[in-house]
Amino acid sequence: MDVEELMDGIRAARQISGKEKSESFTAIPTPCPTKKEVKESAIMYARATIQEGTLALTKEITRKSILLVDADEPLRLVLGMLLENEGYAVTTCGNEVAAIDLIERNPFDFIISDHSSSGVDGLRLLETVKQRDTHTPVLLIASLFEMGPYIEAMNLGALDYISKPVDYAEVQRLVTSHC
Image (tube, rainbow, N blue to C red; front, side, top):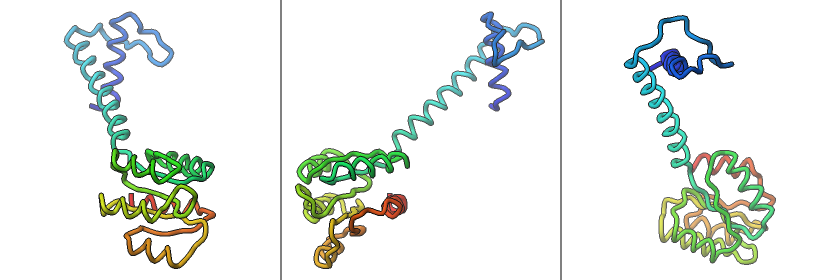
């Protein structure tokens, strides 16, 4: 079915219903379609509508999910909006306890967590995630870069360990390449 066939079907259906004069459609200078032609046109239109709806629903269902954990609310909001604008489904929380609860209830495709802010122990969260699913990438963000926690995070299976201020382009690159 091509666009022209679909448009013909819509035109025929509108012509039969008496709505042949429309700004976006012009009357077809052909004989009135038969009931069979109208039925076929309606079926083609319905199929096209269903296909569009299915495509939209599929896109919604297949969105990758990201958990963003940080006590810094402005960082959560900005980074969350950037990732949502990239098409990801982002869930945010401000502490480790809420993050662990969310992880136990929902599978996430990618996790971004603060390492050392109040209320968030990124290494403990990383350990919990890796015990449940070794394939989920976890990006840790630290207020200050320290070699000890960096080595521990990498040994526990962190994707990367970066420091603040956050380079949003780097975060987007990591998410895109691993999600």
